[in-house]
Image 1 (cartoon, rainbow, N blue to C red):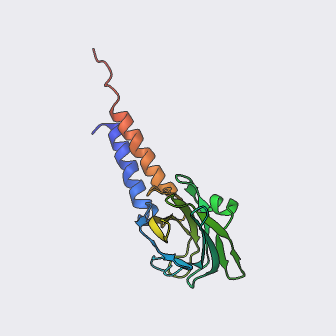
Image 2: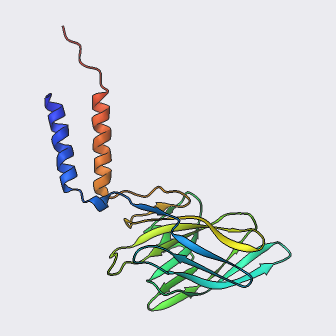
Image 3: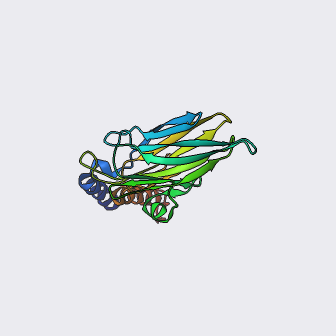
Amino acid sequence: MHRSWKWAAASLALLLATTPLWAFPVVEWNTVHGGGNGGSFKLYTDLKGFSDAGIEGTMVADYLLGNILLLADGGTIGCAHSWFPVVYGSLVDETAWQTATNFLADFSDACNLGSLTLVKDESLYLGFRLDGHDYAPYKEYGWAELLYDGATVSVASSATERTGLGIYAGTGMAIPEPATAGLLILGASVLAWRRRPPPNRR
C-alpha cells in the first residue's frame, strides 16, 4: 500500500475510534404538535426527556385583515424552554436564542410572555431551545412551522437536533460536532488527494 494511503487509513481509524457516536448530528422530524381554533391554542414538543414542553395561549382573530394574534399565556410542564420567531433558513442556536425577542421563555425564575401575529396562508417559523436535565443533560434546538388557514392554527412541519449546536429553520440540516467536522474534512482531503493525476514517469 502506498505510504500516503497508509497515513490516511491510519488517521481515519484514529478519528473513528476517538469519535463518540453522538458526535454525529441527530435530527428528529415532526417533534412539535398541537395548534388551535376558537380561542385557545397549545404547542408542545414530543421528544424523549422533553415531552410536553411547550406553550399554552389565547387566539384573537383580526376579522378586518384576516390574521390571528397569538398570546402566550404560559408554559406547559416539561423543562426550561423558550420559543422565538425566526426566519426560514436562519440558524437556530445559542446566538439566535440570546438575541431573539421571545414569544415565550419559561424558566424556573421567570416566565416571559409575548405575542405574535400569523398572517393567513403564510408560514411563520418559531425556533425553540430546550434545556437539559437528567434524561438529556444538554440543550437542544429546533423549529416549528405554523400556518393559519383562516380558522385553525396548525403545525405544518418541525424538527429538532440533539447535539445542542443548532439547526437551520425549515430544514433538517444541523451543525455537526467538531469531531464530525474533522471526519468530513479528512474525507474531503482524501478524495481531493485521490483525484490528483499521477506524476509523469520517464
